[in-house]
Image 1 (cartoon, rainbow, N blue to C red):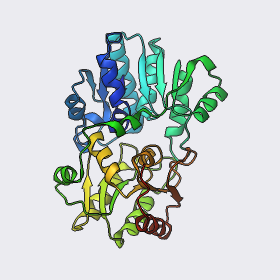
Image 2 (image 1 turned 60 degrees about the horizontal axis):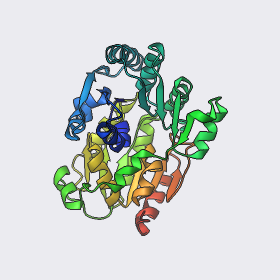
Image 3 (image 1 turned 135 degrees about the vertical axis):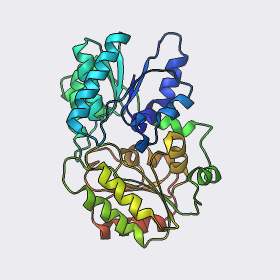
Image 4 (image 1 turned 90 degrees about the vertical axis):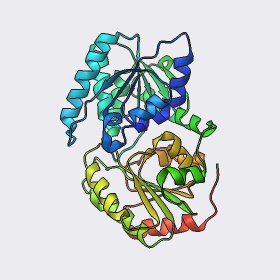
Length: 336
């Protein structure tokens, strides 16, 4: 199993724990990418805290990030690790470019791939093409919905290789160790009076103007009273621009806190406490409604994903975002 950051480790945390405890499997965990970067919170320590044994650490992200070079380095390091470990199969999650590099390395090593969350659509990001490419390289397709199974079939994959398993990240809802409001406030060193808005904005990698999108969101938030917890973006192109904006925006605001990495425990705790989840992350589409939050999804990054629960889609314009956020804050928290 390869995990490249908080985005996939949170999805598979419980599954990895079950695999590690099952005598029928020998889990070899490869940890790399954003997990090993201080600016993403060195989340490798969160992996260790779960008691999971790390087989190898793979430092394939450059500083500053270079997408093509990072892809090549990931393919090399994962390929080397697979040669040394010689696994019977590789489990990959999602759609990041370094995950595609790992899939290519496994293919060249003749190692079967099990892929989770294939068949989904996020038309505003390059992740969409990466996800479908990983599907074509994979041998077992663990999809989250029958609609996604249908898309994988349309891509030519055999029906017997496709299994609908749901979204494993939702297992986090049933954890008994999620922090409450007081513990979260202590962790963030910031009070969390109602209403709480959890904000995550990633680059929209198939269009220009990452700064325009995040500025529109910041402008909408500026004069609406709430407690804003803003998380840092991922390592995609344009991420540093977004990070710098939020770092500056949050300074001097008594009702805002900016954090590099929450970890899945604190993140799920906050989703359970938040009145609204705002931004353009897939967690706002897949996970936040199950946690009981209203969602204001901005722009095109998640265009094409299935919607359920209380999700409102708005263009990346400050006025439209402000109206949707104001309406969500005024309404009763939807609840799970």
